[in-house]
Length: 409
Image 1: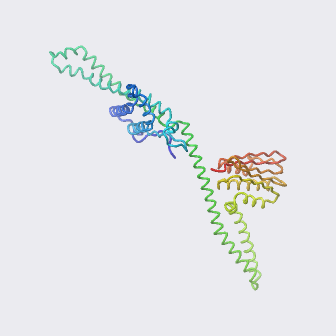
Image 2: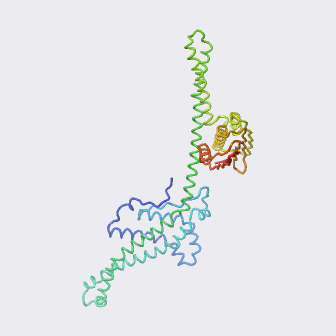
Image 3: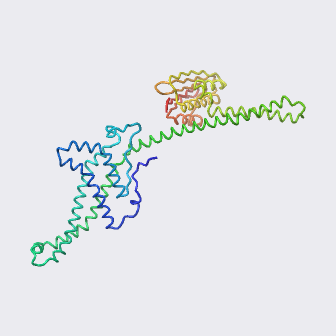
């Protein structure tokens, strides 16, 4: 998963170097930002090229942003993630300006960057002037007394030297503060905003959840296929052999025959349980004949009358089909166990890209998702594919469960 927070590289996680090295590093950082602001300065100083340069800046703003990020990463150890492009957007120039470039970036390159660069020029020029001024007393003292230059600076050498020394003491702090300000503004304005980060993370969560649902469904199909083609076939063969022995062996002791009969019945019971288990994992009829036939099979197994009305106007994603199948299956099982109903109505419709399931019974009602795991499991199953479930079950009945699912993921 892509990190969306600025992070410190090894250079930034170490202790701050001593004063000379730290000041030199801050000065290099500020100086490196001056060339990146030249297009804006040219725009301001060359009116004839202003419109052209503004267009170049806007179209090349991603390159400028990448260069600024590289500057912070190399000289400050701060790794700013790029802006996050929303899913499904193209890479055209207009789309780039609208989605991949934020107006915070534009503000940084057109205003903040040039102002910081101007401050850097002033500070660096002042640093050079401070170095020169701090040496005035020395080279004035070394000049011959008859020199007109020495005579001219005789009254200013001490104040200039003192001012230069004072600037040499103050400017490193100014450089440090300006570099910290530039870093803070760059981190805030060149990286993705909080809204973009949250949207990107939501997209990642939705994609990962859809992938997980598909993976679980594929794994369930694989287990169903392995059980059907492996263990179920072996148990069927064993039951057939035991049945054959039960019918053909006539001269065995009664105790041995009783063991064969019990083994045959146990094998048949195991086949029935395994068949129910396989059907519960992923019924083959759902994949072979679709949701309508699979729901008809469920209705036929429920020990009470079920009126099934299915109208599918569009194709449903296999994962959604499986969720719909198991939702109806579990709902009907709950009705048979707890509702004391005399009939159940099941309606399945597709409209506007949504699959709508309605299961209603004439039972005693009073169903509450907060008091049982069955309805909670139904709600979780529908939510796994961005579906919704609503329950209406007053005491005395009737109970109606309405589920809406997307036809495609």
